[in-house]
Image (cartoon, rainbow, N blue to C red; front, side, top):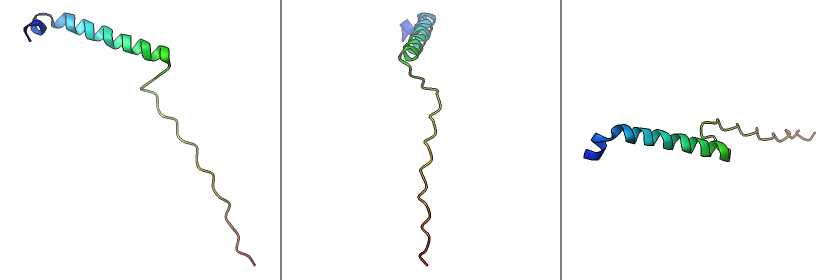
Length: 53
């Protein structure tokens, strides 16, 4: 842990660059983890059967 205590700023910069790189890759691939899922279309209703008579 001594290395992290002495180089915490380097580690923080590395983590930020890694997060940005992951974001760029997801953008280029077309994945958006923050996009809302589209609502499924409503199921078609079966017509009500009329009683014979």
